[in-house]
Image (cartoon, rainbow, N blue to C red; front, side):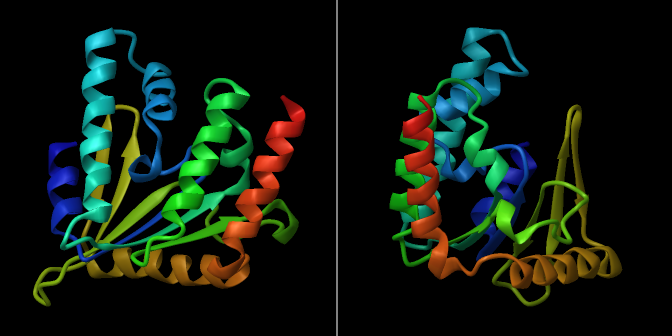
Length: 188
């Protein structure tokens, strides 16, 4: 994961699609802790990983902050890794991030039906240096894949564009997040 963190810090644009969870760069500490506990039981390891996510998040408000374009499946916003209070706090933080000029959120709402990103979560990293190719990051249980072959990256970039044009535009994300927050509050 150190390789990914270094690439994330070098990127000028980060495009990420998440099905199951809120993207790591946008997680509250408690949300991150709950997610990490799903896989790791050692309290020290859990806290180390939460601290890493917190430090990664600082990238979004730094002087050389990358553009983050995150697409989150609506199911991830309803399915909290813990309780409703945790979900409300996470939704509040997403609303705050949605106000940053370098962050663009899109929600793949249930109402839009099935969309092209059926392969699961992925991240596309673009670097400011022309000679560096885009990289697609695919995380799995025991590690990750880094795709930089032009044809593979282009498949993901094409899917990204088809996904983003089939779902609600970024301008509606604030109202969608507010709607989901109201639903979560009513349910708990």
